[in-house]
Image (tube, rainbow over all chains, first blue to last red; front, top):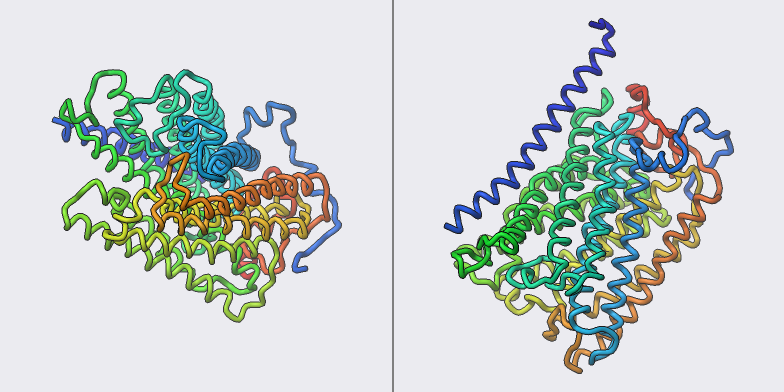
Length: 44
Length: 535
């Protein structure tokens, strides 16, 4: 493991970037499926 | 002239740019991807503009002259889809790609390969969409809102359109995720949320709107697809479904979409007016909160597009009043821009001219929006040319002029050269005069009762239609000046320094002009950040 603070900062930032992107992707997917589910429940 | 010029050596000789077609196909550089978005948007602007000219040519005088009604309806539908999803949205994404990393001190967007993917989806989406002009049954003709059951009567074009919409949505969502991730994680140390440029702020809020609403549109059109091909009845009353539910779903997307198209414009105007007033923006914090307020309100006003389908009185009151509330944060913005100019040392270069035109003409569009928010009045205005005039005032001298203002503002930074200011000033005046001749008479037509989306009309509407069409030709053909001015600038022009405009402020102006292929590989120091903010 590198002790270079810059490398460690980059690794932390990479993890943060990945986490934020996944969360936002899940939010988008939630809206997509949520509105279809809402429509299914309304149509019954 | 309030520009600064230099005659120093090129700064980009260490850039190691990739060459050939691979540079564009496999682009991960935010500037290259930004350029591709802007070129794509420009092409689509002319494709959509050609459709608009076909519409206005047919409406030049009463009677059917040039096209049959089915094709006319296809033109109105395709014009809207192309302009919204192909021209304005990609133009904003192009500007975001170019400017956000430079403005927050980041070396690139956070997810460069995703960025490449977001862009390259678009040409496929629009090939599918435009291909519908050549399939049996013709292009979709039920309006850009794609209401069932009319949309379900589309011929072979139906699956093409639905797939194209899904692709456009995916592209927008991925682009928006990239913007949020970049702004939240890639800001240079010292660039705090509350000292980011307004363009970054407005784009951040726009990106959240995109993430929340584009999937809703995708859900709606997925259900249209299953209704058409798989026997579901989401929107068919005969099977227990409800066609009005589609309208709710569509406008839950559609109203925030209007703000997706206009919020980045607010950001650009908030950059340009302080620069050419040589004063800091009046009420920075208020501008940020006003943008956030507009975004929040945009989620709770959707049914003002549907007053005439019938809804309880409480619903009408709620949607009328919530819509009117939007005038407050929008008013804050207009007054803050005006206050920024107050006692400023104003000069009127092309970006400022377009920004001022935006200020006046967008406000006209805002006022007619307030008129449309009033329920009993809306019952009269619904589906008339008054609505057409309203949203074109918001979108053309609003969004499109702001895009042009932004391009004229940052083009010297991108190319390192100054464009032909005289020609750009001519472009501004012809556009502004043309756009008013084009759209202002449509208010009169609407108030007199002319319905929208019709290829023929009663003779009482002939005069103003002719005036409107003349305005369309003036405005439409004058736009050819825009790519010519850009091309001429790229080919040659007076070299400019890093701070192109005397009153410019922000980190992008701390970079040399043209901006190096790789910028801020080392984050800017606190001293540079402070210097950027000072001006």
